[in-house]
Image (cartoon, rainbow, N blue to C red; front, top):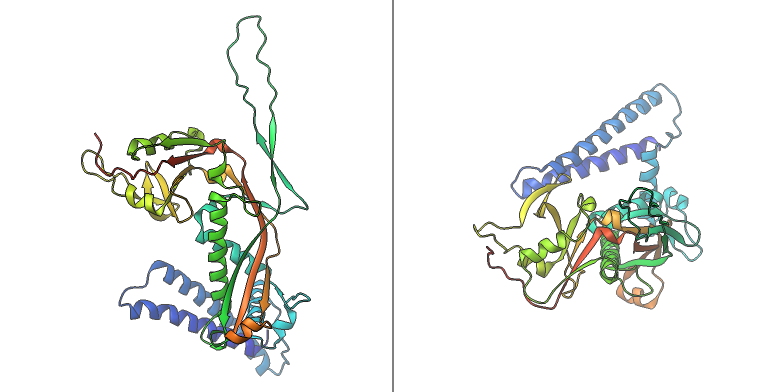
Length: 385
């Protein structure tokens, strides 16, 4: 990067930090910790850039000819992001020429941007975040799944110890296309105040994350993951009447205690609103506030409660340790297609961005999960005992 590029980068970071601090000022509040941490990271980067700029200025003032500064890893990431920004804005530039594109005009998302999308998918979907991730392989990924029913036992003197063979089933993960698309108006793209890359990454990741979460929970077609609710091997608590706190405790007790650590309740929004009204005989709510992994969240029986819009009325609740139960294989190479030449986009004055990748998911340890199936009766919010 030359001296001009370093100064531009420094000024952009300074503007970003100032914009962050303006938000609490406008809202008439103190800056929260996340805002302070982000500003601290930006000021650290600015300080480093100031030092680099000072060195270059001293070298130039001494008469040395300065061509460019060697790219660091951060510079490389920034360069890739600028290239993607130029690609979306259809601008020319050195970074754009270095960006990998396909024969049909698509762009290969830089590795750091691809990783950011997967990370933001995890932030959007706690269910996807907890699933155990496996790297991609050529063809089908096979995961061992123990199916042995043999147990140990006591035997009399001189009798043979029970002999059993450990058997394994296979969970096969193929590739299922996961995609999301957004249409951006040319007016938005041309607005220099809008960071198109951040906007696109956040929106595409959020949509892809929700789609993956839904497939993990209720997927039931050949094009989707194998959804948890359709697995016949996980524990199932059925209720035909009102769902009481005892029923919820039955679900909690349905999985082996070995998997209770890091287990979570995953509930539909309607059921969550009803569980929130449950009280004990002293009028205390069963749903409590607690800190899980450093974050304030709702808890039930000490386990985190995750609310989702993906579960159905027939199966409104799952409980268990997703990490120990569900596997997701992620194929590398998310592809971003940039479509501007068709009639629809031309008439709209917009550009279509299509993100797609290939994943698959399935349960590999059903002992770590349980589900609740309801016959349709509303939950009973009255105190028990």
